[in-house]
Image 1 (cartoon, helix red, strand yellow):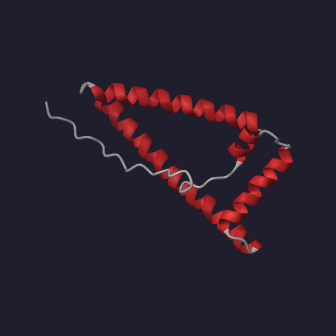
Image 2 (image 1 turned 135 degrees about the vertical axis):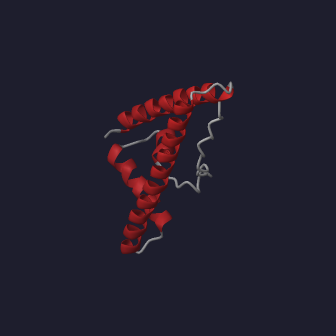
Length: 124
């Protein structure tokens, strides 16, 4: 995939997340949320949270394995990998170069959100 198509896909995904976040806020802000919709949203959140954690671990396992085989530190391998991307795509623009650099969650202070609990349904 090209960078442009990846950027487009990322923008579309961010728009979907923003729309679903807005919908979740609307469902939970008035206390009149449909219990099934709220439960479904919480389950989806927890599903994607778990997928993020698993994929991050898998990615770091691959990076660790390759960097160990090359005799490099994982961070050095990731830097060299981002340089390879730059050479392949002949990116001169500094902004594009920064966007192509690989960053870990720790580099950008990303925090895994806590697991959401499904609220208890009030008895009627």
